[in-house]
Image 1 (cartoon, one colour):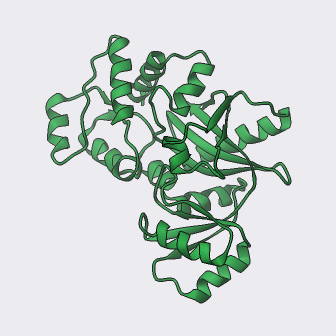
Image 2 (cartoon, rainbow, N blue to C red):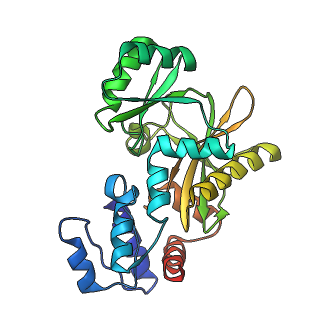
Length: 286
């Protein structure tokens, strides 16, 4: 709700009429009564990012911000998006996906193939919920149990040590890069929402080749998945070989004053008000 309130306030300051609405039972009827020119989606996880709300709005003939149902679904499901990256030749860490009830032999094969440490994550959850870095087989088992609380499928992913970057893309154009430097081992849920020690470096120092690689791979992922309007792509620049690995795509990035997408827009000289108006205009144009 915090993103929704921030967006509505920004649109009102820009002179536009904006009504905040929860996605709860009966929201379709409320929308049809209000009959908005466009719906500005500021939702996170589940029905907001997996294509559900997008399909509902399409059926009602209401324009909306962000990607369509298929691109939303592909981006939300890390297993499906990983396949899309591999098909296009976009560098991304190797992985093995397991279902609930996977046996010891299956898990052991995955660990031998990927090596330790490795990243354990739910395939269909955002905000780094249920994500852990496992340095031993015992930690892999514990991480698997935790990740299964959020998704019936779990991804075991090769651990790539390196610098983490966020690439915000607005209508196909990349905004200034942001480097994420968490005080913990990785940018966990706690680091994103509760750790004041995490640092964000706008326009970080990079060689031109490194910057072009990060932005180029992020844009390739954005296009391959079929995103539109806006997205935020997480990329890790490997320490060993300097390869920019695409980790995941967020089709509905946070839109509060301290979120990374508005932070990147501000660095490009775009105010929160102007950013929200531009995104709303994209919905009306689609």
